[in-house]
Image (cartoon, rainbow, N blue to C red):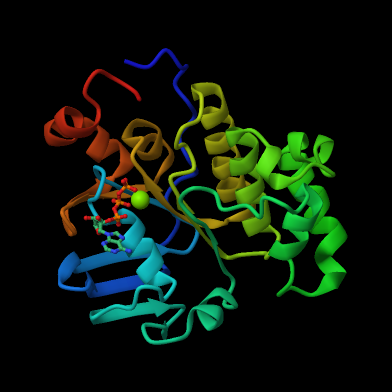
Length: 255
Ligand SMILES: Nc1ncnc2c1ncn2[C@@H]1O[C@H](COP(=O)(O)OP(=O)(O)OP(=O)(O)O)[C@@H](O)[C@H]1O
Ligand SMILES: [Mg+2]
């Protein structure tokens, strides 16, 4: 098992006010069906994770929520509004921010310019405060403010991708595999920041992760996805304790 000390659990699960609701979602790439009747609920103030193996459809779910690819069937509701067929830029202007898989920072822009890009849709009056907040969460970014995104280390790029997403002042943060390819210490640092944002600011987080151990310890609730189908759901603790989860996703202890 993990050598890490037991972390304090996330804040108690908040009252259930639905923020994002996904019902009966089907998504295709050509003839290949990537999502099959997916139902997900993310409530205000929760951290919800979706875990699953490579190719399960986790990123597809996150991208379908953002409108690309389009859902073939089903409904996505955000704060009571049906957003299933809205253009991506309309969805992203609704206080939803995404840190996509593979980080996707702008490689030729500096750290500061990347953060400015995150803030383009928000009132400039908030910029200084938001920048201060991101720099206090990730002091490394402050030290590297003038460095080009593409020359940052993997962990620094992940911090920048999350920092850029935070600059848009989201109510809902979508994170796709923030731990991918990072050393355990950096993973812990990034997950601690997510926990802190949730606990102190009530930020709602939808987290896609292959790192089931860390994700389920962090999340209030989780879903397991296999071949585009949700096969299990429960609190993070419940799923961590399930035999099927342990054998499929936690073999050999924490990843
Ligand atoms: N643009 C695409 N065109 C065709 N098929 C795709 C495309 N993107 C994803 N797929 C397929 O859809 C399925 C789900 O992929 P997805 O990227 O959602 O999985 P994932 O759970 O995020 O996996 P990973 O953990 O490796 O990131 C896979 O079989 C994948 O090959
Ligand atoms: Mg993925």
